[in-house]
Image (tube, rainbow, N blue to C red; front, side, top):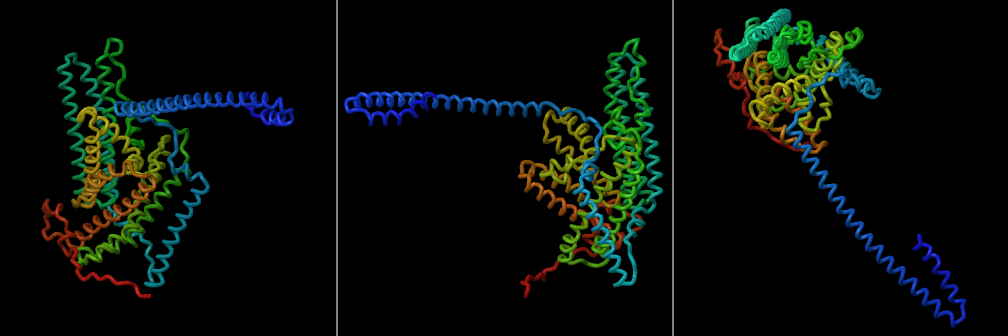
Length: 535
């Protein structure tokens, strides 16, 4: 403030010096020169103070940066040593349910439905005018759901068998409390563990054997094997959650609490078997009532999507593969088939997601008044395969994390997360391949290779990729991968259908030898020519 005042007064003093007599000029100039020197010293001092202040600010910023880096490093170490909290169930809608409340998203939904209807009408009218017949594309539904009633009967048997787990577990919890000797308890616990492993393995074997003996159609077999996998995961979740309760109650047993209820009630176990989750809890958030309009809407969506998927198979996929095993296919034609199946396979992929993870699970949740309906995340915005695998199927990813990844690190690999990740992908790949192999009745490890090698490699390669590039790469690889898988499985399926095995009693090795490679397979075409298009 003083500097400003001094600076403002300087021109006035110069004017006064000009108007003064000559004898006073020298005296006035001396005062002005003194003021200038004083101001220069102040400016020098202030510049020095400013430099010191800047140095202090730089030091403070550097200190803050170092503290921030140290804090991030400590947080990373803490995250490596600590686990996220257990799964919490809260009342929430599925992501698409909330998005469809937005007017613009709902319009896109309507546009997609109208596009499907126009495509359907276009093909039907074309067939009627060109061939004089109408083909609605419903033949795959009749074929793939053949003997579906047997699949329902098998599901009912699986349900009854799994219900027997509860009394067996209850019996074990009471028997081990009878004995006070720890050695006898350990023998009892080991016997129960072996019994559980034998039960799970026998359950898987008997269901697969029943599917093969009943000769159920592919989709019916797929449904039965998916339910088998779901029951296996649910039994493990229930037992693993209740075992610590029994062990703690045994250690702290007294005369007053000897008969305290430690195992969950049968009604809770029964509800868990039907609930759309694989993580066991005694209580789940529940809605107040069943909204039957919502149930009806999701039921209509399920029927509509099944019809549309059948239409895609009938009109776009079956014509590409139905000649395999009947006539030889040139390598050029094979390449064309692969690329022609990419778009239909992508549509099947999206329809399958909407059918199972949205419509079916939301409809069953409404019937069960199950309030937590976060069955998937925004996987379509994922920029890496880490995000995709975590958000694609939340129920399965939660189970794999809680009972396979986390426990394998703690019990098997001693904090080696890479080995735990490989184990998770290996188990997932094995079950996917088992389901596909026994649904189609041949072993063609396309799914296993896709999960175990391609998926696991992309999991690490796309971890730190740019978000835009990652999203584009993810969708590109999903489309190409689904097209290749769809093509290879259907090529082998139709090759076995059109070129059956010669012997009536098929050997086990016949299930492992691809027929599409040997019986009227793909021939080399060395006459490929390339030429420019003339305009």
